[in-house]
Image (cartoon, rainbow, N blue to C red; front, side, top):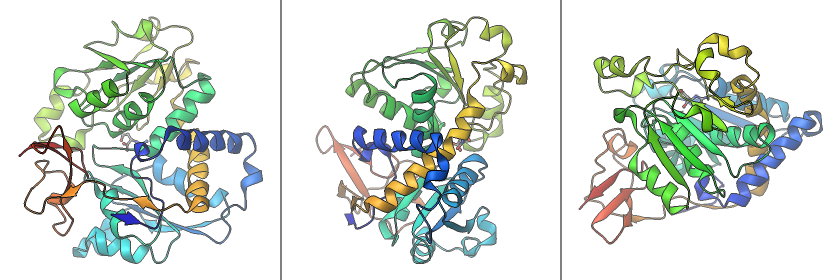
Length: 360
Ligand code: NCD
């Protein structure tokens, strides 16, 4: 299925050269933001946030305003017709006829892809459930480029809720495309990185190991990427409480880290980094959040100026096959074509919206 608009649903829909270009433009903007103050004069960006957000939403809005454009949208679907039962299809169809670019965040995996099927303007995925968060990854790549000076040859520790954290999924998919990056996944057995992400890492020729504690990993890391335990994505409160407070980065653990380590976090932080770590020069999370504006300015400019058509669904539609993930958009919006990629013959299918696998 083809769309005449250039969407960003998953960074891996584009070649690495494209991300590099966006990140480089982000760096140029950071060095001289005023030069870009009229790049989007007269343009309108809509932010449809079906899920809470501080940084992503406000940095997108700031980015558009700093480019000379204007913003519309909602940050509480209860105040829009969504509360009356409107589908993503109808909401995005209408809003995309008002705006030049649409930024969507939704609690269900695949929602941004669903929006891109019918929108009459480019759609940017600002986080779809526990699935992906490509613009956080662009932010992270810009942070690594500026603060580490490279995107290759890095040992990256990722700690916390690796199963539900969409930021680490997107970041693994991206960093494994660069040479000689190694991953160390620090989590409890219940919160390990999903198998499909590990398969992508292996297929891209990168390596990973899985450990249980920050202490055993931190001394070898260039980057420690901390994440929040995603309370809202657990099946029950008991399951969440069993994982809460498992990983807390404090000054004592920071003593074990190298001098050139940087600590990143997409934020919000709950209790996984103690506040006294904030004064450590290796704590990079507030700077990282600031870089989000520059890279989103670069992304908005790129998408509005390139105007390339996108391939929205590349798989095959199986009308009678149901995705097994209850938190996949195809199980919430029935009209969507049930599109799957076949993996290793016809018997293993991967949902094109949420990447859940299924044997048929
Ligand atoms: C993250 C998100 O929403 O996935 N935050 C962000 O966008 N900066 C991380 C999180 O919510 O834990």
